Length: 293
Image (cartoon, rainbow, N blue to C red; front, side):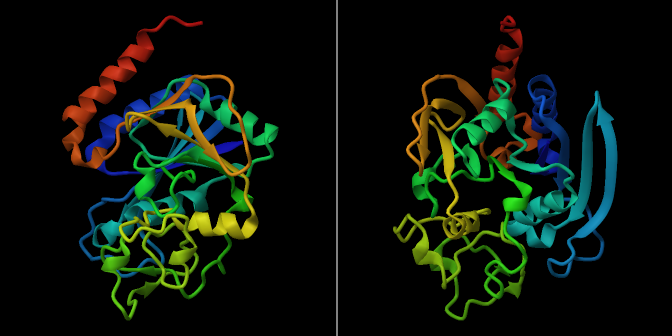
């Protein structure tokens, strides 16, 4: 029913091990996890986005869970590796639903069933969590690809924003985009970040310093398709609960519970052994020590 798609760097594999363990312990609707490692060594520099330089694919079973690892050489496109890696995952996904997720996450509970039940109960198109710094994002509290669930058939087609999607060097802020808007065409890669001059004023956040991170253009697609969505927030940048949420369709949550823990910025945490890694492991250990209900 659900394919989880995530992108990782080898340096944060300790987070990934906990992530996979958490999926196995808590998820019953997830049938496969597709991992794109985007820092594979490549002697010949990658030229362009299409196709990303896939070096290997490994398929395995982890106690019944299908796990596919795709190795991609994207170092020269590092600012866009997250988005391009996720596109490889989506293309490889076999299930009806796509669950975008960061790898430095673990789940407190059976979040797959919670998400699916809410999708059905409220006739939603998209559900997940907002960016931990949502007020700085162009799309604000709209669910971000750090952790969100959508039907694969509802994602944009190849003609969405055709001619406007491009690969640039480091383009997340309006002030960083050159007047001539140069960049390599990347039609179909709707998860790419960076502002597009023809569309940037359609986003809800109007401040000049707003960030157009990877996945930002799903907001535009959601507006065009009139998506109904729900997102959960965090009060401490790490722990997401049902106590804080936003939607565009007047949903009122009743039950209060923890959903997931996100390390945030784990790529800065060398091999998962820095402060973020230790806090992540400690919090997961606490969860494992709790008695079963």
